[in-house]
Structures are given as structure tokens and as C-alpha cells.
Amino acid sequence: MQQLLKNIWVDITVLKEVEEFLVEWNSTSQELKAHTSGSTGAPKQITLSKKGLLFSARNTNTFFKLNENSKALLCLPLATIGGKMMLVRALESKMTLFIDSASSNPLRKREEYFDFVAVTPMQLIKMLDESIDKVRRIKYILVGGAPMNENLISGLKDEKITVFLGYGMTETASHIAIRKAGYENDEFYQAMPGIRFSYGDNQTLKIHYPALNDFPIETNDLVELVDCNRFKWLGRKDFVVNSGGIKIHIEDIENRLSNRIKCPFFVAGIPDDVLGEKLILCIESNDNEVIFDLNFLGVKKPREVIYLAKFSYTESGKINRKATVNQLNLNK
Image (cartoon, rainbow, N blue to C red):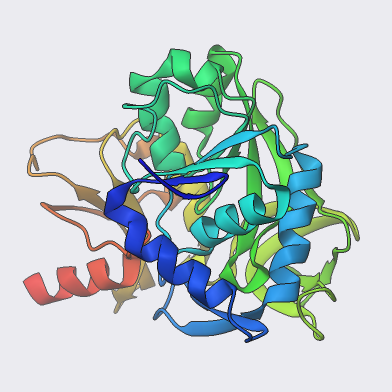
């Protein structure tokens, strides 16, 4: 690895990206460009204040007790807010940061002991499957980018491993709330300092984050508010399918299927002349002979199972549901 700064070591494959970020970060501009993931809509470029990013980094560094004696691994794409914020945290705390290109198992070639690693659920699954002893050596694991299903949480419980699940988005400069998941499991997300919550339209979450934004940030996430600092995440408003008058939460169905389907999958609603919307199960596999018993889902079971050799994915590695469903329509 190449030593770029006193506390930052970079793999040659991502050196140019890191250098470009540092040039932008050290420029006279008070804003930084970022792109939304595009997992639920078209990716868009937004600008975030550097002051807000520093506020977020300091919150995280304080929460996880990160300082010049800490060691962390950046294994997320630099194009994502998660990747950018790992760099900002290192610049602010002076902790030692190793930067690798994103991979499914970022610990495969690593022998160091880390105080802090941020990963996606997909990366965590691979790490648990292939590098469980190395996972145990990490002091704090922050998981973001997508919800964790019950199968993964159950696996963490069995291994007596606790991780921290972050709730956030590009617009909030990474996580703005955290809950424990795994061996220790919290039901509610707890707001980071300087942030509070309220209800938006139809029980959606509204985020009040004055250090980053002058106006409340409206989301499409359905929540159950405990108070202005805690909430239970229920799912996305735009991930509710109305099939013949029955409202089906997509995340709930995917969660219940997660311990039965080992390959990538998702459920979605497509237009139907009779039902209005029909729930379908999409599976990334070349083997379309596997039969799944979906009757345990009752009236909320998918009406059709569709196999695709390859899903569409966003740059950050998430399944691009909209593009994949469009692909299904093209194949008909």
C-alpha cells in the first residue's frame, strides 16, 4: 500500500480516487458533491456543506471513541457517501486508515486488528462466512447501505457478535441514527447528537438536522416514533404494494424469505388488470427448477416467481429494482 498522508494508506487501485477527493476536500469551496445511490430512483447529484460533513464525522468519532490511536479500514466505494465519510472521519480524528478497493469480503487479505470498519450487509455476510475469526477482532462494525434481514441478525446472535446498524442516506451525510443488532439487539434507532425526528405525511420520518440543512429532510421511510430521538423503522412508503386491496410491505416479505433463499432476490409489484398490482418474486439464478413453498405467507405471497441470470445493480452494489423490473418487461 502507498502512504498518502501520515495516517492514510491507500491501495494503488483506488489511489487516484482518493487523491481527487482530497483535492476537492481541501479546495476553497464550502460544499462537496455527492451522488445518491439510485436504488429507488434515478441517481442524482447533490451538494453537502463541508461543515455538515465535519459535524457528522465528529459525531461518529465520538460515538465509537475514534482517535489518533485507532485503526480503521475503508472498504466501501469512494463514490458513495459511506466511503467519503470514512475519509472525513480519518482526517478529523487522525486515526490510521487503510483504504482498499471495494470487495465482497474486505477482510480476506487483511491481518490487522481494526477498531472500526464500515460495511454493507452483503459484505458482512461474506465476512462471517469466510473470515469469522477476523470479524471477532474488530472492535466496532458499522453496517449501512441496506437493511439487515432477520437471517443475518440471527447468525450474528449465534456467533455472539454485535454490530451497529446505521440509518441514513446521502442527503444526511451518512448515518443520523444507530441501533445495535445481533447478539445485543435494540428495537429502536437512537438519534445522533444534534438531530431530532418528527412525523411527515402518512407516518413518514422527518429529520431535523440544523447542522447540515436549514430545513427538515423529508423521507419516504415509514416509522413508529417513540419520541423525538427514537424510532422503529417499518419500511419504505414507496415499497408498499396494494394487491387486490391488501397492502403488502415489501421489506417484510423479503425479510421473511431471507432464510429460505440463498441467492440474491427481491419482491416487487407490477401492474395487473385484476389486482391493480401483482406481487412477484425475482431471483438471480440460472436454475429455474427450484420450487419455493410460499404458502406460509398466506394472502401476501408472490403470485409469480421469475428467474433472471443477472440483476441490474447500482454503482454502490445495491440491487437496482426499477432497472431489473424494466428488464423483465423487456424480456416478455
